[in-house]
Length: 97
Image (cartoon, rainbow, N blue to C red; front, side):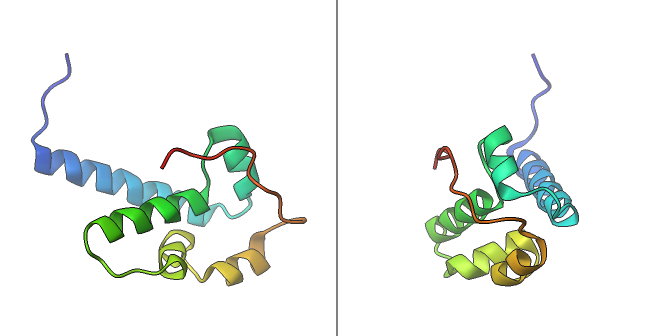
C-alpha cells in the first residue's frame, strides 16, 4: 500500500504535475495535436476544455480562448499559424469529459 499523502499536499503535487505537462507541451510544439490524440487519446485542446470546465465549476469566468491561451502559452490562432503542420484533421476519438 502506498504512503498516505495529506489532501492539500496531494492537490499541490497534482497541480505541479499538470503545470509540468503544460510546460512540456509548450516547449514541444513540433508534437502535433492530432498525433497526441491518436497516440494518447487527448491533446492540447482537450486540456484546455478540461481546464475551462474545472474553472467554470468553481465559478471562474473564463472563455474558451482564454483557457486555450493558458495551455498553448499564446493565443490559439498564433500557435496554429506558427506550429500546426498540414491541413486540420479531425480527432478520431473523444476524450472523456
